[in-house]
Image 1 (tube, rainbow, N blue to C red):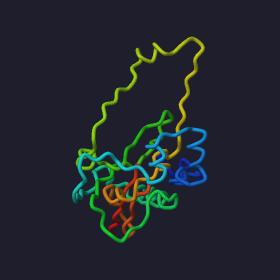
Image 2 (tube, rainbow, N blue to C red):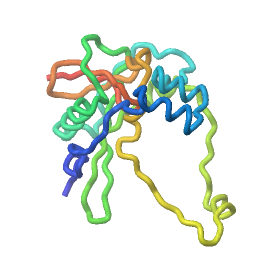
Image 3 (cartoon, one colour):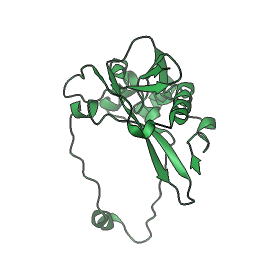
Length: 197
């Protein structure tokens, strides 16, 4: 049995893309969280990916994992539009990267689908690289003390909470079927959508 994020409750959630940027929340970031200047700039202008150089024109068809998943893809894009994560535009985006549908088998045998923007063959190659090392089990053991607790907090649609700077949205395009229009990203993980019949 396959379960999309829509059937799992995504349709009814309260995600409001970019809400974190609203003026009413900004003072909290300043007073309570004592946010640094970079964070405050992102809240004011949106997140701008750290480009090594500005992406040039690029377009690639969707990956094979999208074939046969057109209904799921379109339902997901429509949900993102309702949540304010993508928006219709009249101009073809500079970069149109392929989509993928990732599937994970849950413990009960259900398959959960996730729509992903694949920037690996163009836009990701143009980003500055920052070294990052994940904590190992041995490293974690050094900081954990008897009586400590661990928990996992999964923020629903976390990437949609931070807006992409308007000047960079044109580089995050992707194609979806069934609409005939163009849609551009507002949040970090999503991108422009060129609809084709």
